[in-house]
Image 1 (cartoon, rainbow, N blue to C red):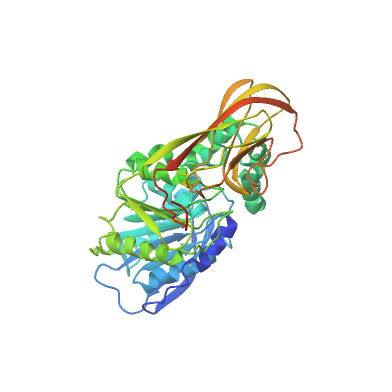
Image 2 (cartoon, helix red, strand yellow):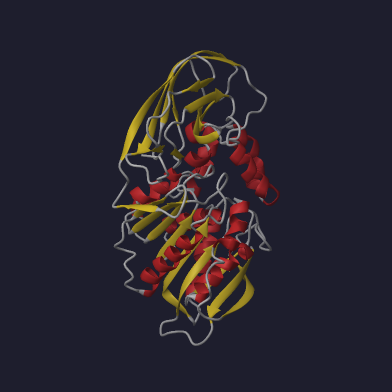
Length: 449
């Protein structure tokens, strides 16, 4: 998350500022005495009647207001006042990191109210932009009733538990990285680190994640929300954005692009398109510009290569491809693919566990050659088991073979599920991969038909 937050600095640097602006820093004190550092950006010149439309910009985990400076500069150069602040426990702000919990939502509400009350800022046309951790704060702020007129969330979660502990098994490599980024400024994280990384107390982790997740409140959110999610993001998969896309009550758009947490990078090659869409969304909902973004197809998927994009009127059509995984070993390979495919949706692996001893987690990694396609894990028990796999959009060429590696950790180069040297023994029987794929790939390469 920290790398994504820092990378937001360069996400929008392609843009040429349309107008000059001013910037001033300060500190706001919250009700409990916590001091939050902020930067306020305003376009140069006189504000329009009613004030400048505003954008609150929220950074990622382990970052600060400085990490979204370039984002703020783009929005202010397009006629927006922007408030960027360092969340409690971040940057020079005091307090402890609370994992986008109730205290941080209270801070968010207080700062939005102060920002909207400034003389040169509109009190009714304020939106929010958040990346990764900041995106989670935006969702949670919307769920709590922070009166944003529009919102944009980038590479983030809607359900923290299912994102980090699917099927009650930690994505231990991911969670360990997140813990390391903020443990020194978060007693909450430090106290729960062992349980979080090793999946030791699922009930406690669910209780921790629930007030930090907007999922249960999504059907009550009527604010227009644009979701930007990466095709392949091992921290927050496409399913986290689909939760919002399928459940919110208000206008929504989703762009699935070539960016994100590892193994993707920021900025992606489609950074220009992301920036254009971000500005256009706020131009329509905060300025009232009739630019058509509200009537365009609501879901767009970027091709894996090149500049191609395919838009859909709703969820894209998919099909289930059932592939037998012959043998009884821990590494199994499918037949040669007779046509290219592009994954989309929640795939599964059905596997029979014949016997096991001291085997705390069974991880399945699906690969095409040496490239990870998806993965999932369960706490294994004897009998037929279902492993739900993460929702990534991955193109696999015709003539490839898929392989599945079973084990106590994910197969290299996938680092999402780490083992802890606690491997016992397990015996596996028959297995079948039900791979959900787009009915027609959005990626087209020479010889792919």
